[in-house]
Length: 116
Image (cartoon, rainbow, N blue to C red; front, top):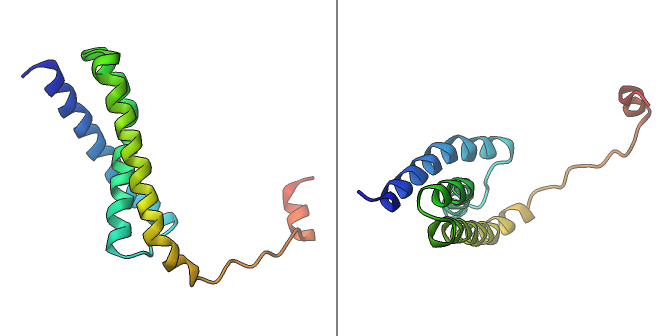
């Protein structure tokens, strides 16, 4: 195997190992409500975004910055942005039916807790 293939395997391993806990954590904080399509594109977006930095660093060090590292990093960033845009298309109608959180404003209790 040449350096390019080894670099791709390393980047792919980092992407998969990093995106699984991050996507799960993101779903716990703010659940995906747009169905299966939204979940798939959310995961693809997270997966591609996780791979941007390793692609830039490992690709530049092991293969070359202009030959492999930067084009791969920019390509992964573009895939991430596109996937998250499609995720938003699926997610927006599902979130439109949610009741917005009530804004209480600044209360005296908040002022006491803030320490101001």
